[in-house]
Image 1 (cartoon, one colour):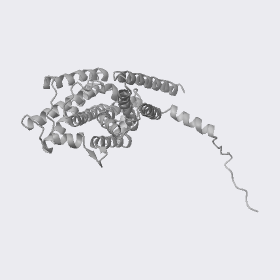
Image 2 (tube, rainbow, N blue to C red):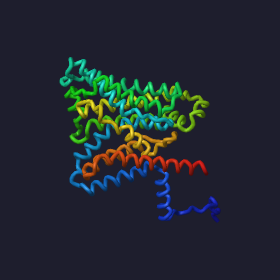
Image 3 (cartoon, rainbow, N blue to C red):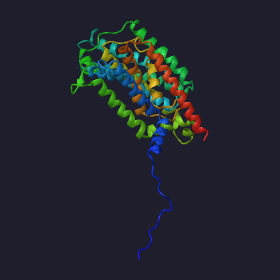
Length: 350
């Protein structure tokens, strides 16, 4: 007679469709990234329905991706800063400054007109742009981490100082002699006949940032500092040095964004980035990164960055005055922070 089979003593419970739906709703309720994705899809459906002849076209998709590429670089850097429980209000002005010093350097190396400059001059311009952004990021990091000045005040000061420095260098007049080869390859060029080269560059940098944040010791330290800086310090993490590096990294990415903007427009855009600070912060927060630190992801910021871009393009195509775009982004940002606060209070009360 065969021996009776042992049972675990528990009966497996089959999930009903209602249980699965409830589980899905629970996961969505706890994920800003998922909600942001749904909002983005809803906006695309709305504007696509209003203007199917213009919004749902290859040209418009390419244009959206290209316009979002420099802003994505700002948002990626901002993700690191906000996860550490910091903030950087200066990225838009640093973008402008980096573009100005890069354009002026290429112009000087070309004898006053960089239109016909080659790749050697362009490479120097790129390095100068990255160094210009890094300098402002390093200054921000030292003042925040070493001098212990609140990040809000430091970066608000840098916001005005970087823009003022760019205006002083150019007397408020944009530099318009940008190498033609830079414009036709990186600025407006495509690969495979479809994908803009600017988008490919942004995607590569974003993937590297994802790897750095989510798979390395540097990323783990970033989350640890944002969760509890004092506990991180007591566990042996060099918090001060790490924060300086994070702000410097944000400056470098803002410098890259400035070079990308220079390549796309073929000129510096001194007065064209007034909303970049708001849009990059909004994208990061909408993507699920908590302003209180310790929580966030690169993927969420990638999704969040297209909310301002889609709103901007959709409003123009729908005949809505573009001045509504920053109002809509600001309202969504406040709502995202409110929901984040509620989620934190609910988690802490358990």
